[in-house]
Structures are given as C-alpha cells and as structure tokens.
Length: 99
Image 1: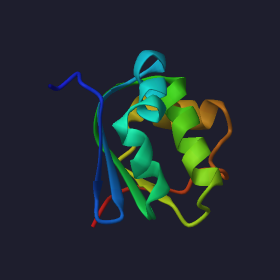
Image 2: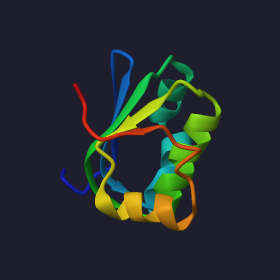
Image 3: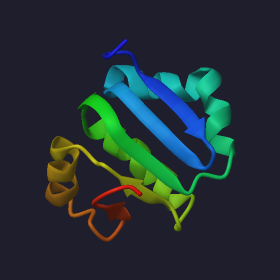
C-alpha cells in the first residue's frame, strides 16, 4: 500500500500519499478521486508522498491556480527542489509545517 496512490479528503484537507508520478497522477482525474477535487480544499498535506515527479508538481500548480487560498504542507524535498528549479515559489503557497 505504501506505493499505491491515494487521495483522501479529511475535512478541508486533501491528503496525498504514495506514488504520484506521470503514471499515476492522470488516474486521479479519471477515477473516483475526481469528485474530491470539487470539494472545498484549504490544505494539501503531502507528508505521505513516497515518490513524486514533475507531474505531481503540475497537479499542485493546477489546484493552486483554482484556489488562491490553498496551502501546501509537508512538501517532500524532491518536490521543493523542483519548485525552486521551475521558479514556482510565488505560485505555490507552501508552509513548512502542519498544525
């Protein structure tokens, strides 16, 4: 289950977990998870992401552009590196911790 892509809404927090790569991110929009993206989301918790690539970052940018108040927490180091590489610090609202 650790490598399985999961997307769970807990209140207004979207919990992303597992493997979020080009082979799995697209499935989120074609599966039962798609309905989750229609709910009000204030926070995306990335703490349980085990593997991610730029397609995961594209998902976060997509969600951020549809909700300017959205906060992203616990972003893995490899995604933080991509944020810096693509100069997205002013696009994504990333918080260091999660209360």
